[in-house]
Each structure stands twice: as structure tokens, then as C-alpha cells.
Amino acid sequence: MENDIILEMRDITKRFPGVLALNKTRLTLRKGKVHVLLGENGAGKSTLIKTITGAYVPDEGEILLEGKPVKLDSPIHARQLGISAVYQEFNLINDLDVAKNIFLGRELMTGGSFVMNSRAMYRKSAEYLDRIGAKIDPHTVVRNLGVAAQQMVEITKAISTECKILILDEPTAVLTGQEIDRLFEAVKILKSRGVAIVFISHRLEEIGRIGDEVTVMRDGAYINTLPINDDKIDIDLLVKLMVGREIIDKFPKEEVPIGEEILKVEDLSRKGTLKNINLTLHAGEILGIGGLVGAGRTEMVKAIFGIDKVDSKKLTVFGKKVSIRQPKDAIRLGIGLAPEDRKVEGLNLVMSVMNNIIMASADRMSRFGIISKKRRVSVPETLVKKLRIVTPSIHQYVQNLSGGNQQKVVLAKWLAVGSRIVIFDEPTRGIDVGAKVEVYQLMNNMVREGAGIIMISSELPELIAMSDRILVMHEGQITGELLRQEATQEKILRLAAGGI
Image 1 (cartoon, rainbow, N blue to C red):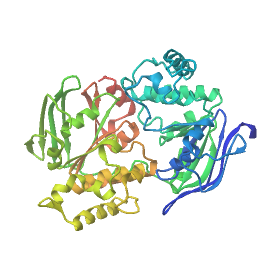
Image 2 (image 1 turned 90 degrees about the vertical axis):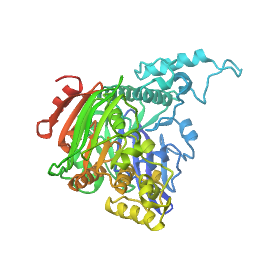
Image 3 (image 1 turned 120 degrees about the vertical axis):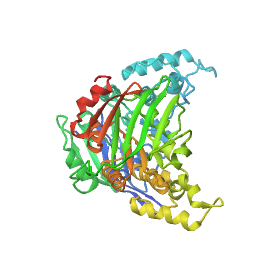
Image 4 (image 1 turned 90 degrees about the horizontal axis):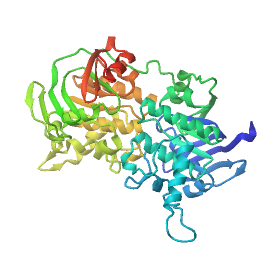
């Protein structure tokens, strides 16, 4: 119905130097509906939502809010008009409590004075939290909350401005199954109150659960909008619309001969975190690590890599007993780590693609502490071509690349070092289906050339399809091992819950 339309974007075009970010794209949002926005990394989704929130002003096109033309020229203006967004990187002050975060910059004052009315802020915060079913004490300091609870605080902060449109950017990327359920319940409550919601996600299986309609973008352009009827949507069709071609095999695992043992970990323990971890990795093998959030998977690989201190650890690398006390020891032995949070731990976002790629191999490339200009350029250029990293040049800042290409830069860094043991912690988190397939193919190339990969993944289909063996963890210890041909989601979840 026309009268339920709250926002229309017509023929929106946005240009940056050398880039056509949006090309006559469009979007229609309706009151009380969840509109899913899909597209590969670099499709223009972020640019589009930044035009909705006033961060960018379009070069061409028209925006209608409740039927009236409007120019959204700043985020403050957009918020005043009832448009709010919750991004992947939360905008919270960790040392303040929940209520002070919710009213940050809009503090309630006592009468006409300059004294904060804390009692009113706590009372109103409790009301707003209750409005979305969030059972969080407004007196709690934010740093003491988990990721899911912090996200609820961000949503509460948005609705406290009585927003009419709420944008959720990858809200489920780091949540567990139960946390996602609670988030979806909060979204349904907001829908019932007439809030229009833009929902961005790379998890296509979620779309039917939460969406009312879906718009697909590709290369900055509008492709199609489809209704979601009876919680059903054609995933294969969406993938084809996103990438412009049909992806036959979403998990292109190659059968590679398993070679010699290249890593052996014995008696890896850390009080309160890890308990007697023992594992082996072979050349040509992808060893999957499964388990629930908090099971100790990331702590285990950080301990192997020398980031975290441990109480005991015996390591054998390529047949030799070794000691890894810090990451540079691991790097010297041919071990690389692509961390879970690539933006914080894996990359320097304000450095170029070139400098990120050579970051870990500077010692090998230098002579008397000086890296020759030829090697400094030739190695990154070779890897950019080999990994098909989409970038205008090797001098482009990494922060300007899509998520999938950022992940390729992380991988290129370890290829530049010559790593033969590479640890991937959530290798495809936050990247689109097309980029996922490219990352899987790069992993195939690595093991085909004799490398071994340890892959932590919370995506069970990915874990089962891409691993040769799977170790499952629960409360800091390995509870079972499954071969690829015998692994099922049910078996993995049983072991992840502590079963046998």
C-alpha cells in the first residue's frame, strides 16, 4: 500500500574520485517492515545506507521521507528526522554505564539547571530496554556486557530518539544462535511499533526468518526487489542476482593428498582457559576447529602462535621440537595467523595494500635493514594479481577495500612470508558469498602446494564442507574428532555442548 511507504530513494547516484559508487539505485522502505539489503562486498550497500543516514549527500537523485522531498545533509539532521543506524563497530563508551550511553549527548537535566537527572535517565533507559525485551540493568558498565548485550544497548540508544527508520548493519555477524533469536524477537517488537528496518546480512539463511522483502544491489546499481512470502526465499536466485552468475558449488573443496605431519601440539594448557590440548596437522590438510563461542578456540590458536602466555606447551614444527614465545618466533618458523577480527588484529587500515602485505616479511626482504624499492613493489603486485585483490593500486589504503579483499590482503601477507602453516580464525566472517568461494579456492591452492591449514569456523556448513578433519572444543578442551565423511551438524553440536 502506498500510504505505508516511509522512505523512497529514487535514482540515487554517488561519485567519488575514479569510482561510481551508486548508479541510479533505488530503495523503498515501509512502516513496520524489515527490508533486507543484499549485495557483494563493494556492491554499494554501505554507500547507500550512508546516504540514508546523512553521512553522504547524493550527487543525483531524490529522497522522499513520508512523501516529501528531503535533503539529508548530516547524520544529526537524519537523526532529527527519525533515522538511526547500528553499525558493526559499536559507538559506545566502555567505561560508562548503559543509561549514560543511551543518553550520551542528550543527557536529561534537572529543571532548568546544569545538573544531570540520573534518576530519570535510569528510569527512562529501563523503559526503553523493556520496549525491545532486553533484560539489561541500566546501571551496568558497558565493558562488562557481552557483544549481544552491547548490541541491544545500541538498538535501545537508537529507539530512544523515537526513530522511525532503523538500519542494522550485519547485526548477527558475531552472535550465537540464541543471541540471534533474542535479536530477532527485538526486531519483531520494533516492527509491531511501526518502525521500518533495513537489515544488512551476508547470512542468506536468515533472510526468510526476519525479512519481509529483499533488495539486491550489484556494482552500485539496483538489481531487483523481491517479496519474502511465508518465510520462503530462493537462495540460489539471490546468489545469482548478487554475483551476476550462477554459483554451482558454494564449497569448492578439492581432494588433496594428505602428506607428512608438519605441526604437533602437546599438553597445551592455561589455567582457567585451556586444558591439555593435543593435535596434529599434516601437509595438504585443512583441520577444522568447531565449538560454541567461548569454547577456547581462538585462545588455543593465539597460544600456539605465541600471542597468549600458557602454563605448558610442547610444539613440533616440521619434525623439530621448537619454542614459540612470541609471534615473531612463529613467523620465523613459517606459521601465519589470519585473526578473527581482521580490522583490529590482522591489518593496519590506514596503511596501503603494499605495506600491509610486506608487514610480516620486512626482515626477509631487507638488507642491512633496508628493503629495496623493487622488492617492496614487486612482491605485493605479484600477490595482488595472484589473489585477484580488487584495488585501484597497491598504494590504496586497506580501509577502502571491501571485506573480502581485506581478507585476501591478510592472506597475501602470509604468502609473502612463505608460511606453510596458516591459521584461519573465522575466514569468511562478514564477507559475501562470491568472496567466500574465492577464499575457499585460495585455501585449496595453499594445501595443493603443500601447506597445512587450521580453520576455526562457527558456520557449520562451511566447517563440514571444507575440513578434512574436525576437532570440536568445549570449555577449553577437545571433546571429539570427526572425519569429514562422518561429520554432521548434530554430531558437532553434541560435542560442542560437552557430549561424547
